[in-house]
Image 1 (tube, one colour):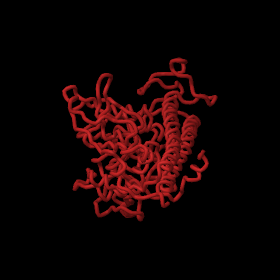
Image 2 (spheres, one colour; image 1 turned 90 degrees about the vertical axis):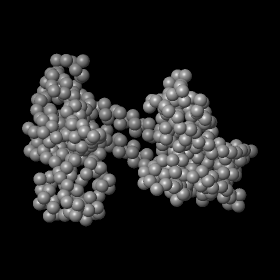
Image 3 (spheres, one colour; image 1 turned 180 degrees about the vertical axis):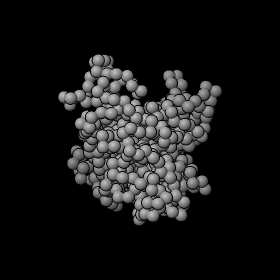
Image 4 (tube, one colour; image 1 turned 60 degrees about the vertical axis):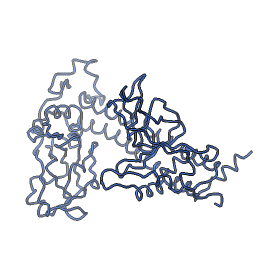
Length: 441
């Protein structure tokens, strides 16, 4: 690696320029307008040009730094987790300009530095560690990266030929990751559409999704949440659940964070797909508190949970036997279904658009919070349908969920592969010289 050396970032770039703060409307710029980027234009190592605000006509004379092709944008002022975040910009956006919180890096000599390669360097673990050490600010919510420190960042600098190959390899991985993300987004949209159809049309005796109301109006009747199949009977969760209650929070000295004790769930532990995440919040209570002061909200296998304080509403959880002893706080409602209501179907219903629309219309909004009462939870309309049809609906969604789980797992593997390859390639631990020899004339 004698041909690799450390150089300060400032030796590789011509300039590190920020934009200016201007007044703008909180909407993307339109035809004939110019936009100023939001800090969210840099996200996940990618450039999101749509994240901009339309600059007021009277402020247009103030804008100073247009987005240029083959450049790198860096967030110089942001939250501790996002300060220093960067992205590569392949093409110019002459109608988009930088705010004062973003920098633009331009190369000193394109015959010496490949900007795509450099963009990966500025996403590496070494760079993140450097930013964490050198970002300044006493606020716990906002940090600033000094320009001098940014320019002093030590870059392990290989020959241009190796830079290009490294960039191509990592760029190919990025393309695969983006394609996988696109497939997952489409699957999520399909799942959302399928769930809506299943909760409004159901499955007929032949195991098929019923025709829509517009195609076969004779199969439907009116209900509180729109047209439903004639076989379904409109009822409420009070009729189909033996218990609907909520939790409470014990005294501070009766709960703690850790792994020992009874799991004490908060809204953070719930998710929009019903999977409980015990790592999101690790609060515990004693068995005595669980069975004494909080006995009302002891969770049993088959109980379905949802948050009644938001935003957002619609987070869910399904309690299983494998979870052991579980309790909940006052922001979570517990539904215990009767034998004629499958927990899996209740979970889908609570998260579906008919129930969520009904609840949100009646929710109380105060000081930025959205609150549901237990009375609303008990009055929530729900169809009474056969266990067989409930199971068919649950199975259809479960199959879609399995496809999403496989895709999500593959995406996670790709991200891990990318970070591992970045570490190997950007440090020279794995050399690309054999590839160069293979393409040499």
